[in-house]
Image 1 (tube, rainbow, N blue to C red):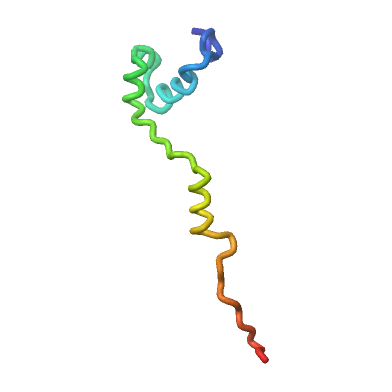
Image 2 (image 1 turned 180 degrees about the horizontal axis):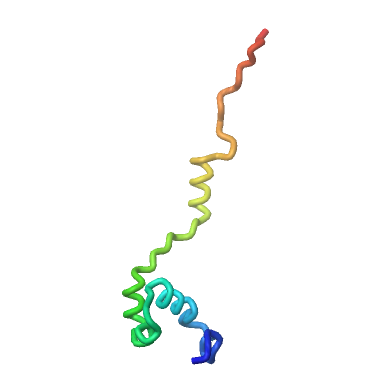
Length: 82
């Protein structure tokens, strides 16, 4: 292999540059250890992929009701009321 831009690395599917960064950099695997792993073994080493669900329109509306930009405040009384 000559680098990260070699044949097959630009096709959709596995993110080889990202997997290599995770395996070699994050997990500190030696290259031979990385390439000896199956994708499933690498996934197990990296841990579960936890991703928060996207905010939906109804979720945004609920947040806007709970935390309005201009909360309803009681009217201010002036110090010099007549």
